[in-house]
Image 1 (cartoon, rainbow, N blue to C red):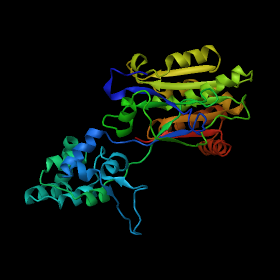
Image 2: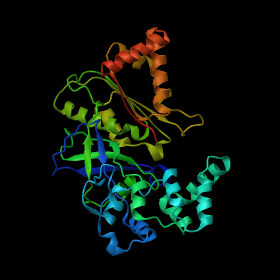
Image 3: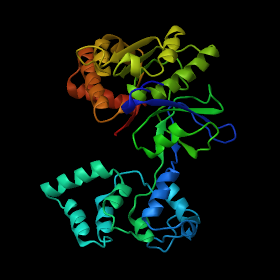
Image 4: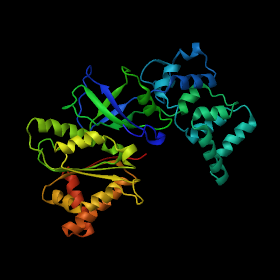
Length: 374
């Protein structure tokens, strides 16, 4: 999409073909992706774990406390390392502590255990090692006398978990496809897999249903959408559905979109698509905050504050739905604060009354969030 020349914020529009599946979804649902570790990374681990090719092809089981195999199928060591173990992430301290006792060199063992101590010196050493080693393989390479038995390795390593993405399409408009908007993460096992996948690559996916949906029975209800960065993904899906509704001659309610990014040139995701939606009245108002295109930083909450009259009119008179998508740690809190201020000032309410107003919206499924923490 944008940011191809900006390594730390490159974003990809990924299209997945679901024509030969029974998958159903709508805009606002989440796509679960089951990632796999890169083949070269798996081979590096096999080498450092002293496992040759023949042994890597052998079936392995790992039992839990109830003597059940922790893996859902009979799989080889290579398959376990490919699909079931997170090899790319920073290792847990508990895992490193177990690995330290596999060091045959006493100095290496003491050095690693020292980095795991809860002291200023230990913390500083640990963070330095994380920066240089990056993942479990880096630690094993840093301490060459550390040879971990495969059963112990599999027991203490974290399991691979699905990665979830907000869907940026809608099955009414794309009946045989699913779109997702993916911000590439350096060293990220899933985003790297998606970015490198060739056309025709089969990727294990599933849909996780959500409640972050348009009001299907009240197409005339106004909507206020707030989604900076990749937070715009499900809102793009909403626009796909609203276009289909429009093409079927349904009357649509007003739609405000607040989008934000660093600068227009590198980060304005779906600019052409959103521009066409404005021209076709799929969106009735668009307010974009480019935080780095001027000396002072401007974010979506500032644009929201500037449109306080329109926001309050849609909330109070139009009974609008509010949709907030993106960063939970900062953006969502800042937007919540501004919305409270708008309700207080334009609605003539106290802070407590404004909070109760928001609670009422939430209970009526009119105040919806799809937010996440990094």
